[in-house]
Image (tube, rainbow, N blue to C red; front, side, top):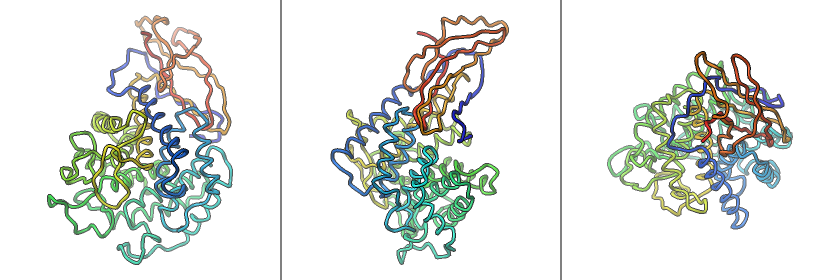
Length: 450
């Protein structure tokens, strides 16, 4: 993607429209649900207050989902809220600078920088990254001597640290941040990854622990952190990078395992290998795992026929966990291991997972459900723009097209778009203007009129 261009338009393909496949998940209702959950969370923070600091890992994880939602909401208010957080933080990371939890917030700063290009956003995070690059990181990852303040010695860190460093390379062009991130990723993987189970231990304290049923202890949210962090790291890694294929293989390996152990209710319970001891569904782990698997489908790393039923079931478990007012329930409390959850249990990182997952579901539905007529229009600039969009419908020999049977629709909101047409012997072009907020994407497609 050319991030310096004023407007980016992607046509998935150009094909004759022949009617849309039915999907269990509707895009417009999914979009509305994401908005309800995001708005509930912001209202809660603004009226009840922040349970943890705005630089805390819990907040940082929420921002990843809020940023993803802001890209599709087409309303600058969501970016304004995130920039307000940055201003209140003075664009600084947390107190313990080499502690991955305390620089998770760097993901937000860097992603905002890529749109709004304010050097203040990344100054402190880049200073920390320069230090991380220069440190040898040659300590053992055994859980002692506060190792977590210096190394990625626990699986959560693989979401908190690597993506931000990868995004910083994208933003600055300095490959050292990404390369260091990948090197540290493999150090942690060599220590924490169980090759037989294809899952990550939380940290070295869990190597010899067992669940009630005798299984090894593998935490749902912990492995959600890992595979979501891996998806985000891969997204920042160029395909020509020497580590790309190895990262992709690990992602596919984990995805295959997680799909195989999905619980019958569509979720991943707190304990992956002993779900019966933790009988309630758990939405933070399910959200991060579902996000990663759906991202993998959208990026072509995972098979749509194989994984679409998995993520659809998982999304059903997630959306059925949302209260009528937009509160997300069944979020396991903060901790380091599988634990019990409840309908009323919520926290901001669960909302981050929900929004990440939901936005990827929107992309998947748009990409696979419109017979090649989907257009994505992106405004990478810091200002609202209005641009003309064209959707090209190719005529196939022997096929009669009646223009009054088709219309243009905003896929996510369901809005019917006014358009004009021009026609040639080979094509019909549908033209219309659209307004895009800063950093926003809109998805359009031809739809049969009903």
